[in-house]
Length: 306
Image (cartoon, rainbow, N blue to C red; front, side, top):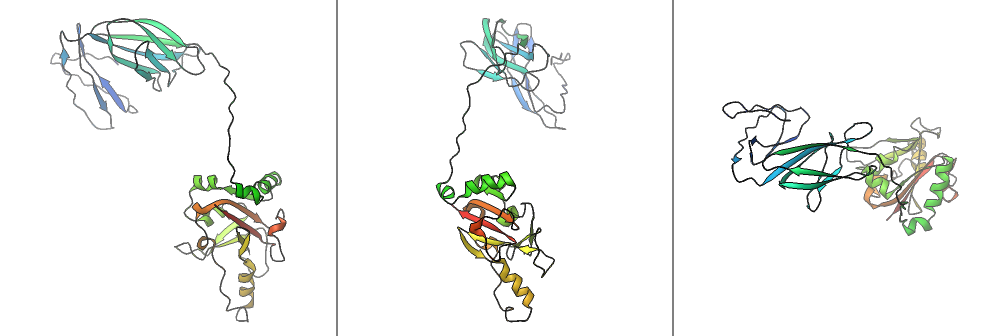
């Protein structure tokens, strides 16, 4: 954008609302000013003073825009540089760039972007002036070398059959599986919140500290309550929460089972950051044999620690 100052050397410049930064400089005859970069904020005015450098300027400025030669659309993040100079700038989302402080004389402009043919173009920089160029890059799809991604599996989960169960479970819809990476990405405050996101699982009875949480299968019923069927919980292969204990306790009322201690909450047993793998099964379908039993028809949550 180029504007002319009034007779007093003042200039009022309005910029688009989505602009975040502006670099300002002034030109007068063969002289140019120092540059000033301003961070823009909506509704905030900035007053900038630019000092002209008469007789001191031995450099010039190069600005331009890079476009797709076919579509004329701006090319963002293109790398623009002057041969034999270290500075490399990237075009903005409008394809624009600026190179300042260039020695006067002839130079070779280099423009590169993946998917386009590299371009070099001679330019001449004039003392104290700004040279403007418009560049069209020709699309040139390149064949890249194959990329190979390598994932490391925790040996313990491999031995315990986690990956094999996940393969068949995801193939047949027989379970929901979370790895440590999945848990880290989700960053749940309590692991019951993540388990409850599995299809067919409902979370209930949590207090504000996360204690007392129970996980129920909505795909099975005990006949004792309309809450659902509470899932068993296995920790490193050991059954640590038996849902049937609470179910029988509720059914007994004031009977001989009424004094049993309610089973622990999953949140009391393990923290999200301690988990290497998590398996969730609801109902008998797809339930692995190693986590089955006479009271396993509600399903199970299987946790493997790091």
